[in-house]
Image (cartoon, rainbow, N blue to C red; front, side):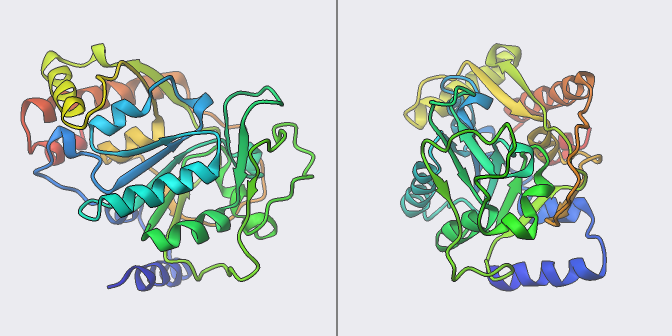
Length: 297
């Protein structure tokens, strides 16, 4: 089944029934029971807004085999995705996870900080689909706050730069919109969002929190890929839920919502996910091939 047909099948099925989150996740992030620590991210790309990560954040994810992009300029991120897939035909990005701002549902935002003069850019969901279609991306997982509002028909293709939201700061590095020729439902990629709009949360962690075996495996993987050993990193709740195949994950085929939500999970929820995430990596490092058995615990 080709990528376009798969996307159309998901869209058609969604009109009839709610597709279980586990099925969506299995399509977006296929399980590889034999996965080694350095291959956990094979086929997965992650985009971070710089102010939602830490310096050299991508080193951690690159060591685990993810493609990682951390920049305030969407044009540079899009170019990076294209260059990665062109250079790695054996392991191209098929699923992209967006660890970005949702700007209260008014645009996918990348920025250095909240200072108005700092580097900042926006992209519409339609613009992202149109620009990544030629690179073969199949799934776009939007982890931004109030992600459902980003799919509103009025801004799906072109953002409204005069929306009046206080979080919509000057686009010092531009706005990427879809072209006039782009039409909803014609892209090869499928949009996945949390079922309920809310504020997404992340944790800052340190590699030293892992077991010695995990640290050694990460160091070896980083060296093999020509990058320095990572130290601190940022990790979101939804990322941990995805890699853990968490039973509580609640994904849906992207559908728009109007209501702005301020709901946020308690810190204890994030801490428990990280405890399981740490145990997961420690287990995979100690016993390559155990990814499937530990993920649901």
